[in-house]
Image (cartoon, rainbow, N blue to C red; front, side):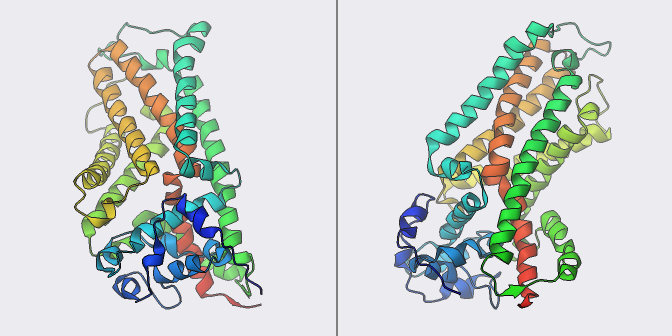
Length: 376
């Protein structure tokens, strides 16, 4: 099997935030320090060597960047300040763009104008819809309160309209993400491979996909348990909120003021706590720059944190204003919430940071498949 060298790979990778990896002279300290490195899957050192040699093929078929959770130990102990941890983060951005068949992921990661432009475009559509399009069909701001003194939110944002929109958006995002995962599988398992994996192995090891998504066991091997905990809270909080809003919207978007111990409110409170805990850890870490893993932030990192924070804050305001009988405050908070949430889901989930929630557990699954591969 021939491997094609691409001399321009370095210039391409620089666009994704990768610094000067030529500072690395392959002492092996990063690999020795990493608690996740294992025989046959040595990182970050192996990926640095592939980049230095301009070997795009082996890079795009690798799973190592997704198995790295950036605890920062490799960067802290690097004697040449080559910053291997941030290098692996940048490789994840690059691989995301390779899996994406639309080319939008590359545009968003390499151009702030493209990403901000799409965010503003979808946010504007949401605002125009609520302020002009829906009122033209007789859907108006209802300032009368319910018998319990709550806001009639469903008269302003009817379930019959919002729910089909949610499902349509979920279908589009899922289709894009699933098709990208198939491309990921093709590049890692199938393309240019001299080995094969039986169907039985695919079935037998599939439980690892679910287990890694729910628990993130590899992350827990890192010494900094607070980082793993904050990441887990963030992931679980978002996942619960996404499922509740999309799948159980009729149950969640209610005009009835339920007791605080009702399962609907408890789920909402947990999701809010998980998101705030994870966001607080990430934002404060990036502001104080104490931990090495927070010292180097790409523009996409800050955009993601800003949009997720805006979604959480406006969601909290909707709840407070709704149960306290403040109609106009509720409605404008709802518009702001949707104006942030919609572009975040449409952009971040299939093309940017949130896609990592899918790529990481699938990479762990494909990693296990490669272990059980046999020669063709």
